[in-house]
Amino acid sequence: MALSIGSKAPDFKTTDQDGNTVKLSDFKGRKVVLYFYPKDMTPGCTAEACSLRDNYKALQKAGYEVLGISADDEKSHRKFIEKEKLPFRLLADTDKTVHHLYGTWVEKSMYGRKYMGTARVTFVIDEKGIVQEIIEKVDTKNHAGQILGHAEPVAKFAKAPAKKVAAKAIKKKK
Image (cartoon, rainbow, N blue to C red; front, side, top):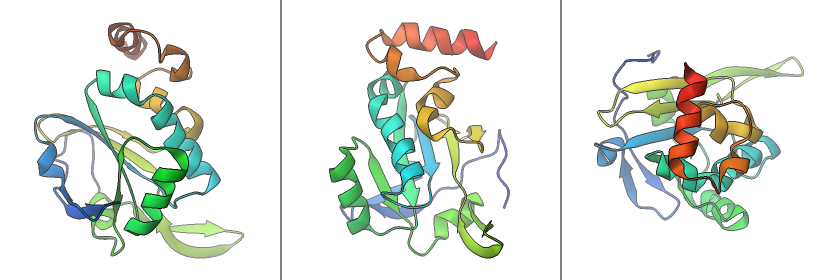
């Protein structure tokens, strides 16, 4: 199933780093950043998570709930959260059910060897559960900036009032 902008985000049920059940429908009425990433504690995935961590307050002020998801298990997610001091939940999709729903379990290639893995893709979902944006070319070091809609790193705006950050994001989108 290929998702597109304007389509209904598939509901799912999985667990977070603490084994708590999480469903997308739990977030109805709130905007959600659902980002798929390949592996805990790898360089690119750490850069991406830290971009979101460093700009988490700006993302929250813009109304976003952040959920990371990979095929890693709860224990791996807990270690990643503790090591990088991540303020958001990481979801375990060890059986890849959610990956299949969102089309992020794909064939990849490295050094000529083909294998299956997670596509680094982010889905921005609105309050009604509709996909508003799909970010397929993730800039791991500035992922929060991509989500908020501007190209320059968001960290320099972290102390700015949310209205300023949001206004700058809206201005850039036009």
